[in-house]
Structure formats: structure tokens, C-alpha cells
Length: 421
Ligand SMILES: Nc1nc2c(c(=O)[nH]1)N[C@H]1C(S)=C(S)[C@@H](COP(=O)(O)O)O[C@H]1N2
Ligand SMILES: [Mo]
Image 1 (cartoon, rainbow, N blue to C red):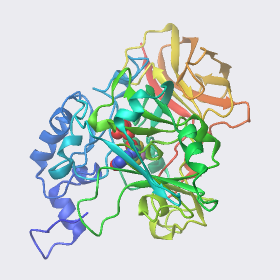
Image 2: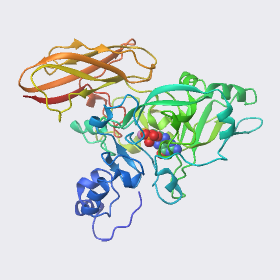
Image 3: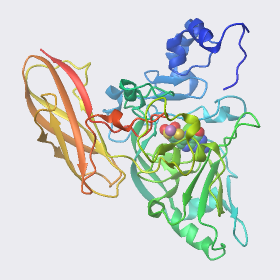
């Protein structure tokens, strides 16, 4: 981030203290006064038109916001007004068009498919609209969702997301694989990486563009679509319309918005968003011993598929809970490659666990709703939940064991402390 310090003698840290550390911790642009910060924070709707003013704003300049769980739990498919938003470049200037939940109006939208192909091809939005469409209900989730919980070990810098950096969405669009298979005929055999790039270019020339790469043999691409609709409507501008690559079960960053380019190449994208950010170290790392600068493409992997996860939607800490039988409910999900076989719930701080009832999900990548009636006595109760799938993958009791400097892929057992009256 580039900004001018008004008082050249202050260090960045001191300046931070002056501007209000709370605001800085939440990722607001330094330079805003404490009061302005409060005003901005209250106004998600002013940052992205059409967003609920109840959104929790992490970064006003970039339009980064998450959904309070009390809102998220109300809807089976997360409405555009409350779906979390994540963009990497300021939502002003030439990207002003991204700052709305209205659908963008680009009639001549074209995706250029080129690279190691004999003849590059242009696929227009109009072409895509005439092709067969399929639906994919899938969780959309930022790899940083839950990052704030790593702070129990050591704070991972970046937006301090709770669990609201996700939603359950019905996407609709054109299957990607047949399009790729078509091209493969013409593609050189060295074309093993597919890179997707969007229309949102970085503000400064030295900054790096947001582009993501996938191995063309990745089975996740078999379920991928070039989506034209979100929850039955043209995709909102802030969520990647008119065309977004959706790879069900893959973390948000892999789902490139505003797709304008698909490149078939021998190498992955040189973008820092591929080679430095959105990566997870191959081996356990400790705070201070492994830093953001230490990431390489050989000691880390991209944040591809979702870790198995479950979240308590009810009761939340702010709910009034009366003693007696209470329905404990929430959602679970994974990368969709193995069925979720159990969600266990504990109401005694992890001493004992009982299986919740899991509803049949809309798809392997969708929220799996679960519930369990439990008798709660008066006093303070710690409710916990833990999902497990057919591959035996489960959630660690101590999620901070997976600590890394960027705080991605949080999947620790969820805990809610409620006061039962
Ligand atoms: N073109 C483009 N695509 C993008 C991004 C971006 O900044 N530019 N952000 C990514 C990240 S990190 C996430 S978490 C999701 C967020 O999707 P949403 O804002 O629709 O919820 O979009 C992804 N796709
Ligand atoms: Mo993200």
C-alpha cells in the first residue's frame, strides 16, 4: 500500500497509533481520522451500493466486508446484499463500476483464450449465453475466513475475519471442461497450466495483477463453470459479473471475477497472487521463524480446496438462551471430494460428543445443515462442533496448530460460549 505520511518524523507504527490502531488493525486506509473511520465502518452500503449497512467492514478502500452470522444464518442461499465481498484493488477510479451489487452492463464482453494454442479464440458473452447452462450450489469462502482465530497463537496480519467470509450460493453457467477439451485439440502438449485473469487491473504499474492458475488435469476443473448467474440473476458487479470462473469447493481466490482472459501456458502465472499470496506452507511453521517473505512455490502450495469445516449458527453468543431443551444448529462443508459423515457436538467443553443430524445437502459443495437438540442448564456453556468426512479428514481441536503468517484455511473446531438463563 502506498500512502504519504503527513508527518515525516513519525514512524509508520507511531502514525498508526495516532490514526487509531483499531482502524488500522481492521485494514482501513491510514490517514483517515478516527471519526471518519467510524463513519466509513458504519456504511458498507456507501462503499458498495446495495450492500447491507450491517456488514462488518474490514477495508473500506478495497470494499472488503464480512457478514455477521446473525444475518448469514437467515438464508439458505446468501443474498447479494449480505454476501461477503473481497476485492484487491481500490473500488474507485476505473474500477468504480465494481462497487455495486447491480449487474454490470457490458454487452460486448469478450474472453480471449490464447497462449500455447494454434489459434487463439474469442468467446463472447453472447456466445456463452447460447450454450447449455448448469447449476452449481457451492460455498464461496475467502481463504482468510476465520483468520482472527489464529491470534490466539500469534496475530496473522490481514483482515481479521471471523466466520462471515463465506456464503452458500447458487451459481449457473457454462461448463468449463468441454470448452477446454475443444481447445486442447489445438493446444500444444506443453500447455498444462490454465490461468484466469479478470478486468480489474491494478492501480499502479508495478503492482501485480490478480490472476490465478490451475493445472489443466485438476479434477476440480471438471465441475467448474463460467458462471453468468448468481442466485438466479445476472452476477452483481461486485461479485464478478458478467462472467466469473466458479470452481466448486475451491477457496474464493481461485474463483476469478470478471474473466477476460484464459491463458493456456507451460507455466503458472507470475502474478504474486499466485506465487506469494494465497499459499499454505508445506510444513508446520512457527511465528517469527517463517515470514511472508519466505514463501516460495516449492515450500508452499496454493490455497485450492476447502478444509473441512463446521460453524455453529445457533445459538450465537448474542442470542438469549433459556434453559431446557435447545436446538443447536449450524452448517458444515468441505471440498466436495468426500461425503461429510458426521458432525459432532459437545456442550461440555469437549468432554463428550454427540452426533448431530445432517440434512441432505443441495450438492457436495453446498452447506450441509445440521442440528441437535440438547438440554442446557442455567449458567455458562461452551458449545463446540466438529465435522468429519469419509476420507477421515476432520477439524483440529486447536486450529492454531495450523498457524502460518498469512492465516489462511482456518478450520479449528468452532466454539460458542452462551449464557443460559
Ligand atoms: N478478478 C478478481 N477476482 C477475484 C478477486 C479479485 O480481487 N479480483 N478476489 C478473490 C478473492 S481473494 C475472493 S475471497 C473472492 C471473493 O468473492 P466475493 O467478493 O464475490 O465474495 O473473489 C476472488 N476473485
Ligand atoms: Mo480471499
